[in-house]
Image 1 (spheres, protein in one colour):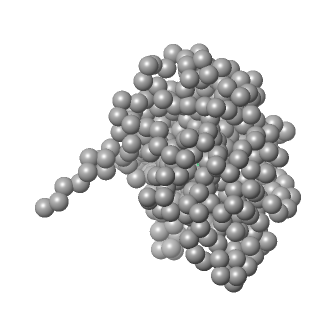
Image 2: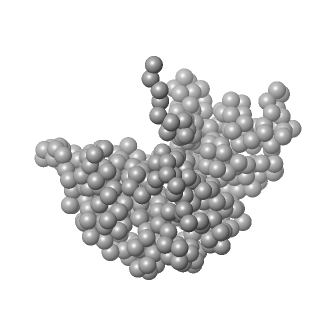
Length: 398
Ligand SMILES: *Cc1c(COP(=O)(O)O)cnc(C)c1O
C-alpha cells in the first residue's frame, strides 16, 4: 500500500471553502440557506475586462507566455504600483501567478525551510500558517486585539522575534477582521523589521475596498530600507471581482522574484494567457465602477455592524476595509438549545447552519476562538434575512 507524505497531515482543508461548499450543497438541495461564507465579491467581472480576454482569444493569444507574465501585464502592474502605491518597480521585480494565494505560496517555497519561523498575526487568513507548514517552517502566531483595531503592536512583534525569525506576514485590510493599519502603525512595524532584517510579506489584496476615508499605504513605500525587505502581494480577484480568473502578483527584490519565478517555471509555467490580457484591461482601464461597489459594501457594512451590536452579548468591530465582519460571540459559549451545547465557535457555526439555516465561518479557523466571520458580499435582502435568523437563534440559547 502507499504511504502519504507527512506534509499532508500537517495541514487542514480551507475552512472557508468547506463551509461555503456545505452551504452551496444545501442550497442546491432546495434548502433556504442564507450564506455569509463567500470570500468573493457578488458583482460580475466588468464587461470591458471580459472583452479583453475575448479579443485575445480571437487573436490567437492561446499559447505559452513568459513564465512571469506577458510584458504588457507587467507594465500595467508597474504603472498601477506607481499610480496607487508610489512604488517603483521594473519588469524583473514582478511575478504574475495564479492568484494572490499562488503568489504567496511561491514566496513560501522560495524563502522558507525547516528551522525558520514566520510570524503571523491572528486573526489570520486561513492559508498563511498552512503554506508555512507545507514548506517545513514554523508559524509563530501572535495575537492582535479588537481594542487595537486588530493591528499588531510593534512591541509585541519585537518580543516574538528570535534568531530563527524569517518573515512577518501582514494583511491590511484584513480578512477576516476588516481591520486596516494606519500609516503610523506601519511605520512602527517597519522600524522593527528593518532593525532585525526580517522580511515583510504584505498582502494588499483588499487595498481598494476601504471605508470612511481610510487612506491606504503600502508598507514598502515608507522608505528604501523596508522596501528592500518587502514582497508586496496583490491581485485581481477582489478588486475586479475576478476570483475565477486566477491572477495575482508579487513585487519585490529582484533576487527573490527570480527565485520565485524559477520555482513557478517548474510547477505551473505561466498563468492562463487570456486572463493575462483581461487583466491588462482591468489595470489600465476605467476604475470608476469601484466607487459604486465600495458604496454598496459600505451600506451593508453599516447595517450588519449595527445589527450585531444590538444583539445582547455580541460586540462587533467596525471594519475599515474588506467585506467581512468579525463579531465576538463568546458570551454565548456554555449555553444550550435542546440537546445542542455551544462551547466554541465551531459549535456555534454548526448550530447556526443546522438550526437557523445561516452559514458563517467559525473564528477557530482564523486562529481566533470566540468569533465568527461573515462576508457581506451578498445582497442587502439576504443580509437582513440572515441577521434576523441569527438574532432569533442566539436568543433561543439559554
Ligand atoms: C482572497 C484573498 C487572497 C487571494 O485570493 P486569490 O483569489 O488567490 O488572488 C489573498 N489574501 C487574502 C487575505 C484573501 O482574502
